Amino acid sequence: MRPSNRDHILDAAVRVIQREGVTAVTFDSVAAEAELTRGGIMYHFPSREDLLAAIHQHLADRWEASLLADAGRPAEQLTADERLAAYVRVSAQSATRAELQLMLEAATRPEWAAPWSSVLERWAPVPPDAGGADASMDRLVTRLAADGLWMFEALAYRAMPEAQRRAVTEHLVRAVGAPDRD
Image (cartoon, rainbow, N blue to C red; front, side, top):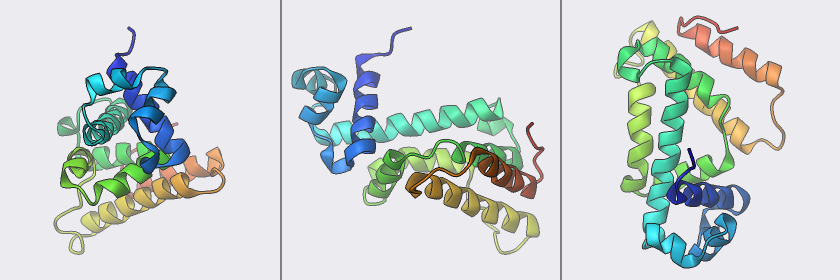
């Protein structure tokens, strides 16, 4: 099935952000990247704000699809440890500077943060009793370590060797009692 122009535009905008940063997102830059006209972009997104909001939703949806694919079942059918294990594995393999930049931008705008927060709350919520029970503390530390690994991958000047990334990931997954994947 052919992707829609809307998805094509959003993917082009993400490439612009990956290469040049969020401030580089303009109708003209995205149109050039998507090989469409400015009017073609504006047909789907009447304002830059609409475009940026849609980028946040688009990436959050993609992130959730990756989590679902990794886990094999929707979040509500999984234990907390199974959800967190999927979060760890996906976080270890999908870090991009564009995602990091957009998440940082979302911190200042609740409407942009909402899609990201929704995914986080389903898959890797901060345990309400962290600091109390050992299992809750293990989940919190694992979540923080996964976030750190994701950020390291997004910011590093060179990629972590695949074997090392896999070993760190499986170490974190074992920390919450989820089975290893071979």
